[in-house]
Length: 215
Ligand SMILES: Nc1ncnc2c1ncn2[C@@H]1O[C@H](COP(=O)(O)OP(=O)(O)O)[C@@H](O)[C@H]1O
Ligand SMILES: [Mg+2]
Image (cartoon, rainbow, N blue to C red; front, side, top):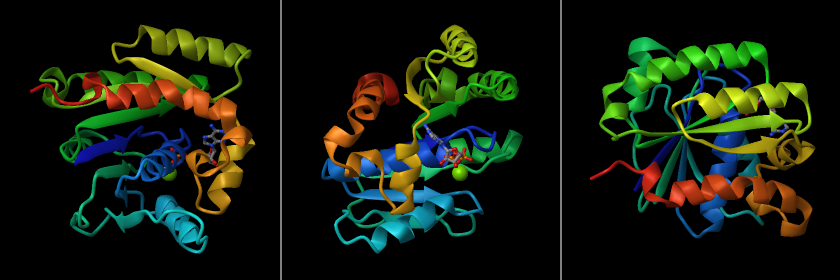
């Protein structure tokens, strides 16, 4: 089973958006997907509830990680975890123990970049990271491509000692999709061609060896 967590202690960086869209990607690849929501706000679980009412969409299993002990559903191929905001220190370490792959979204904002700088330092000092048992990726999110803010983010992420995989543009389609419990991978390809293209490097990275613990 694959375990992927979307993590960034900062709220509003796009954890839920990336987690739900990753779930939509894998389920459309014919995989059985469990989405575990660690955020007491339960945005990912609400997304699944909205999805359940739309009979055209392939079901995704959901559970809260807040109080429940994680239970694997039968034949789960991919477990995607949506992390809460504001976890640090020991709580962060406990969460990170559960996964092999961590995707870190960062938005083009000086405040978020500064916070991400501290968080990246903290995570790089984790033993599981130096032992390559936990693999990391950075994704720029909510990007306006030609903006100065994005340029700064690109420079910042490019210098980080974690691979900077792709950027996702700031697009209404993510909001519209989420309304009905969908991700962009559930939508007709032609309506989201550009966004699908932006996801490709992340999908490729997730397929490759670099996103999994080394043997
Ligand atoms: N690429 C994007 N384009 C447009 N809106 C986005 C994008 N990513 C996230 N959002 C919006 O930004 C807000 C915060 O994103 P969310 O995924 O909830 O972050 P988090 O889970 O880290 O708090 C939400 O309203 C979400 O719909
Ligand atoms: Mg969230």
